[in-house]
Length: 300
Ligand SMILES: Nc1ncnc2c1ncn2[C@@H]1O[C@H](COP(=O)(O)OP(=O)(O)OP(=O)(O)O)[C@@H](O)[C@H]1O
Image 1 (cartoon, helix red, strand yellow):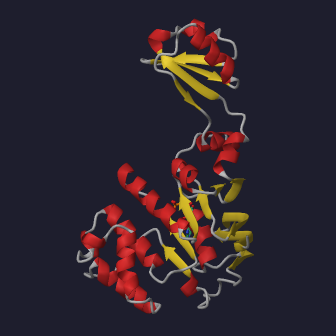
Image 2 (cartoon, helix red, strand yellow; image 1 turned 120 degrees about the vertical axis):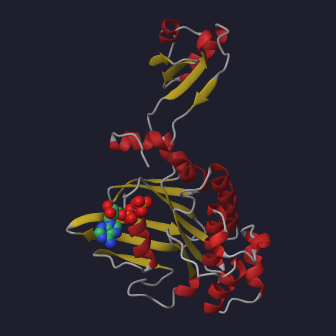
Image 3 (tube, rainbow, N blue to C red; image 1 turned 90 degrees about the horizontal axis):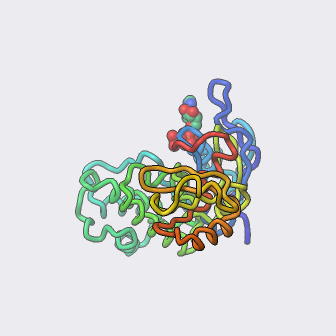
């Protein structure tokens, strides 16, 4: 596989402070890559330097074999960009918005309807963009980024401010786009989103990449414990603490929760005592990775 994006030693400073601080990574052709981090971590700044919208203070970017800065017209037909704040043309319908974007790149006539279909807006083709819901409007902006059939798509927080159902619907769409062979680079502050969608993620905080890899590998590389919970009535606190393999235990109003790095003997002991009512087992997540790397809980 070839590298579609190569970022080396990227730095951006504002008022003397590095908000992107020596960031390096590569994205392979066809990959779904995520920049994951809390607000203000430097995700948008990094993305916009790759897109050629901001000038790096140091470091280099090679995108599809080209330098994106200063603005490189050879790249424009090959990349699709969805910015965090979507701007549509005033009073145009969804179809007209798409035709306008498409005409900038000589997109074939059928593309507009194909895109409306892809993003699930065929029945809203005649609706003015400002009358679309949050989720529909995000879908339209993704369609606008795709209408000229680019090789690489950049999406900056595409699901921010959407309700859970709209986010899930958008995830299906993003998978479909990646399934069509597009390289997708996404920024998000949602851990679950990165975990579910991305082939690889870079966890970024205060301008630096803390860790990078497939989400499952990052989680597996941790020594974070498993949490096993059962109904409170099924197991008392002292009993829970004395189970083989239990590191600690606590109770809330409804559950007894046991923390363990060797869950097998805990589960066996619970089965032996017939104390499995309401059993839930939760392994480590990317939130635990962030906690281990930064020493603080993840707050997007
Ligand atoms: N043009 C600018 N001038 C000064 N500071 C800026 C500018 N753009 C961004 N910053 C600062 O750089 C830091 C990183 O911002 P950036 O937008 O890249 O973060 P982010 O991870 O994308 O977060 P968010 O999701 O909130 O946009 C922030 O502290 C922000 O205030």
